[in-house]
Amino acid sequence: KNEVEQSPQNLTAQEGEFITINCSYSVGISALHWLQQHPGGGIVSLFMLSSGKKKHGRLIATINIQEKHSSLHITASHPRDSAVYICAVSRGSGGGADGLTFGKGTHLIIQP
Amino acid sequence: NAGVMQNPRHLVRRRGQEARLRCSPMKGHSHVYWYRQLPEEGLKFMVYLQKENIIDESGMPKERFSAEFPKEGPSILRIQQVVRGDSAAYFCASSTQSSGNTIYFGEGSWLTVV
Image 1 (cartoon, rainbow over the protein chains, first blue to last red):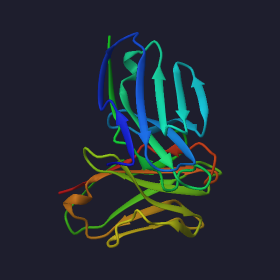
Image 2 (cartoon, rainbow over the protein chains, first blue to last red):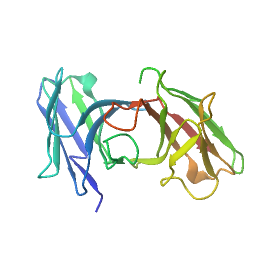
Image 3 (cartoon, rainbow over the protein chains, first blue to last red):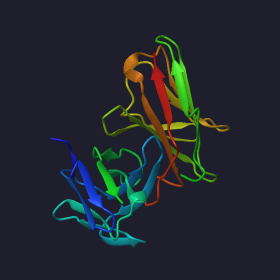
């Protein structure tokens, strides 16, 4: 079993829908990261969480440390949100980028 | 992605040749990380470097792969005697310190071994 599991693997939705992507992990972590990757493109860091909830524009990320679970929500989804969303956990002492363990990603397609 | 520069973006090498991938971190960042993304697989950590030091290379294959981050110039990921299985996207990331800071990724270098 992978240390970081994401669901769903693939998600197709209509423009405007509320999107939820889930991430569960099985190891102790210092922080959890949500990343976005467009096809053939680079990776953008969306959030770094160690507790609670963060919001940036239409994106919301939550984490429950006790349940070892995090969710990424997209409100009022738009076709430009189509990308692969990757959950990664850090076991480094400060939550940084060393030793990140990644989920396999969720392929999101938003249809107009 | 702003500021982390990787080159080349695409590299084609024949089996047995050497591949050199370069990463210039964001200005002011002294921590560099390399990750590999194999086709249809997730990203995997390879190595963490600070200037002139390898901090953690637990994700590096034991043979043919090496990395450096010299005092001057970019970080280099070097793959000797490439094989088809080395075909992948190689991503570099940088941060100001290893803890508590946002990670900035480069656009990636896509290596194809023919």
